[in-house]
View 1: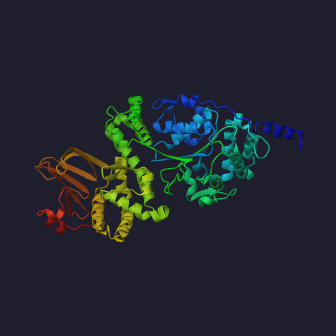
View 2 (view 1 turned 30 degrees about the horizontal axis):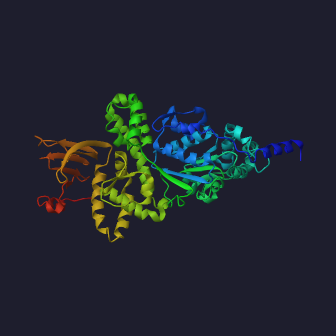
View 3 (view 1 turned 90 degrees about the vertical axis):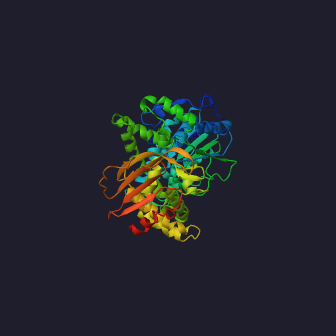
Length: 530
């Protein structure tokens, strides 16, 4: 053994048992509802840069405070084997919460590692190269701590990490050894944050050999995924592992061991958080923000999406911004919903998911929601009815529930005797909505006499819309695909929708079944519906 290697081994041995003191003042000074100033130098991961952009502050939300409180009980008090699972709707703030926890832990003296699973599952480059790209900046950023920690290769962890970053042929194997060393470390708390975790658990693309094309592999074939894939057993000796599941995760129930695996669902803005955000950015929002919270579903990412469009287009008016946002957000939710209807992705859960989507599509009352839809975060409870989280999502299901998905739903409904009678209802509603589908939206108020409600609002989407509050002197020219709305004595609203053959299809919104309207019954059977 060389003199130099002996010196390094002795240096490492010196730090095997003593514990570094932590400075938890960063945790103690956290106040819910205040804005936390970002340290741009710590935001090295591309996903964080994309997320925060030019923002300098993030709001300290209730979920963040709860997570920091748990970390203080665990790694800061030397409790072992703390695993924390974060779930919630898309755009609700899981990544922000994960980032906030990691930066507070780092400032308090913990050794932190943030891993975005999608970085290792998108198939853009050789996975060994990605490991090298990840390790070097991480080692340099944490070198003060890493130089004081031993590794299994009898050098400091900093030397081990830099060696792995420079040895591209063996980087994956050496990275695995490094993670095992981190798991055994007790001198300082180790906080490992794994974002987009379930990207490891589904089929994805990866480049496993140098200079080869990406191939589709299962989760068990990804060498990085194998390190972290068993979330129920992956842990550290002193510290915490934080997993953030994306909203598209539809696996089995998590947090089976409540003693060591803590589970939280990140929520949309509550009343106080929404008030804080809108008050702080009042100069960047429309003059009247009363409509905005419901319009974006109280979801942080959707508020950000709206604000980006508002910044560029506010000079053209609120209505134009709402139209542009609705189109953008509807496309996003359409893709999300169609994942829930995909047979290959959902497998044996596709039947339950599709039936639920059909009921949402038809506005039916339900007393239960499938795990897949609950995990998506797109469903909220309204009385005894489940509805989608915002107007864009409600519009998206009409686009997502296209002919192919409707046919699949029909085949499922027919096979279940308890609900097979609803096939006709689904077919009729589908034809009406497809005829009326477009980006043109009109909002109107109506009085629901059956429920004794007043001043309710309804949104109607159609290719062309004609509205008459009074009987017109001359009938307008009505083209195929037109919705014709007339107000009749503040009692019911009549919709006239024309198909491609210009045959009139008639629907009256009423408390009574259609067949009980004696004057309307002949229309139903003399009209050809295609």
